[in-house]
Length: 396
Image (cartoon, rainbow, N blue to C red):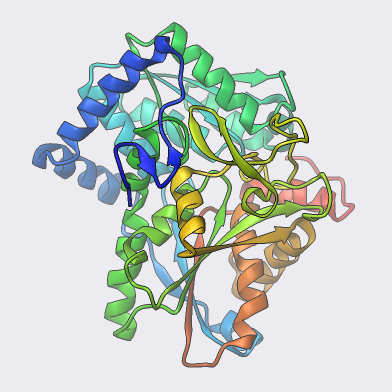
């Protein structure tokens, strides 16, 4: 849905220092060549199918449907992918591209740790070095994933600047890339940053909506009425939406992390509280203070704790094609627990934001309507944090 090179309406672009331009041009040139290369795509599809366990399942949540008493609910099970989330889709694509470009080292940012784990996994598979930048606060919240990354051979560098969360990890990774572009590829984890990253990540994640469409047509003979996904930077959401954008009968709903409420300062709901700005190499919507500085944001979810949103999501919002709704910590935790007890599926707290909104709207819909929720990841990593939220002090 690009309207011009690197632009989605007024959003996107390349707002980066000159020291990165050559690296970005090299990446764009390589991607434009390999995206249509038969050999590259066969190799990637083999990795996705044999290694990452695609296609991921489309599961009819019969008990959840019955409990809510409205629309029929399907779960797109990205949580069953190798490494436990949708992140592997993009990482295998970017790591393979980096190898074709002659790079020997991957660097990445991570919030909840799932993207970092996926990068460490791909690097181990492809004999590449891997360095992951993670906010110091997130290393405490997601200690299990820090261990997993190190077990896979990656170096994890805690970032202490700023709020010591995802935005600061992105900034540090970009600084590292500036200093070492010859042998290094920055494997950005979401549909954000300077062009061509939003397009590259979207294309690799679009496998989600392509599979949803074919699976549901086979099962039900028609398209869903609603597709719901959580949104931080927005990679699993744009992956879930992309092949439905031209299907105007399908509602697309992104669920933002409202934290303690959009009427508080402790929120990360960008579309609902932010405004237009430039940050991390792109023009989009960002949470900002009264002086236009990027504001500190908060969410119980380390993966949604980002003060911006990808430029294509900003454009879909401007067009009115997708809706972006706020979901609070409390609503997400309730959904985390409800899905676990109802279906025996523990979702990532990020994904639980999408489940929470489905719980809200499904009872208002008739039984012949269908909702697809993308479960972007599994919740093993979040159990200790949710227990602490509920007042039980446990440790991984």
